[in-house]
Length: 166
Image 1 (spheres, helix red, strand yellow):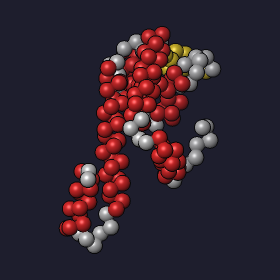
Image 2 (tube, rainbow, N blue to C red):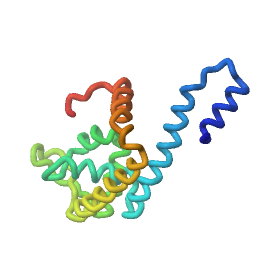
Image 3 (cartoon, one colour):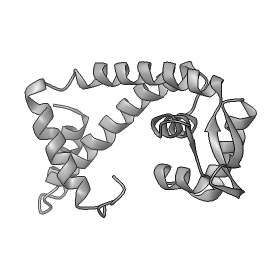
């Protein structure tokens, strides 16, 4: 019996007229997300990064050469507001991990690009991040992984509109 089971038992006693079955799934997803996020954040903190900083650096790194995107593209990929992105870019630029450069396709605008230091850092951190994810997923029995992944994909798709860029 886990913590969520105890909560469900309390509701069954206090409100037997309610079907609180979904509460168990949502409670476990929330608690699991909290545990997993703490484990993932530990890798970022080890390298002086936050999730926000990692997100920008990883987005630039996976974009491929020249590892530069317009601020608008960064906003679209990371799904944050322009004000939030400006703050992230400013902090990372101050740390010397990214730089603003003239846009080679449009001289009136800029792109955000990884510096050599930013490229080296994200390549090191992504290796540790992926290894950490493998460590964490190993706790889910292998025979359940594919079905779990398929179920979550289907459930998530019911909330999100298809994106033609992916």
